[in-house]
Length: 178
Image (cartoon, rainbow, N blue to C red):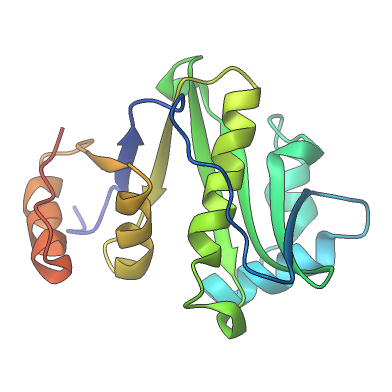
């Protein structure tokens, strides 16, 4: 088995105590609107590389709802996105933080955390009481942001104990596995 498979998972046990969104000057938050497909694709390509089409990757998923796809905009232009998804594998009370991306030109301002938090607020509005996400070992800045948002490592495979230990060392934080 590839040492970096399966993907890492992180869990936030509750959504009740979410902080309010604190947007920098000139930034706003909103849900998906018709015509946002190209903006979503641009943000995701800048964040992950490769090409992902909104229609095939998001809209065709049975869990797609426009309000679940959140955007942070700078002076009206989408610059970051995160989705409040749902997957039955985690239980009816659990939302999934999905497809978090930010244009690199807006990195370093906390926008990734803010758009993730916006998606978590959407999960809460939908009645979810906890949240999960999947991520990759090399996404160290994202993992640090998720940790600050209250997500903790969640073990889905025994090979992840050492992987989480190594990530914790890189971040200088004790990442214990649940």
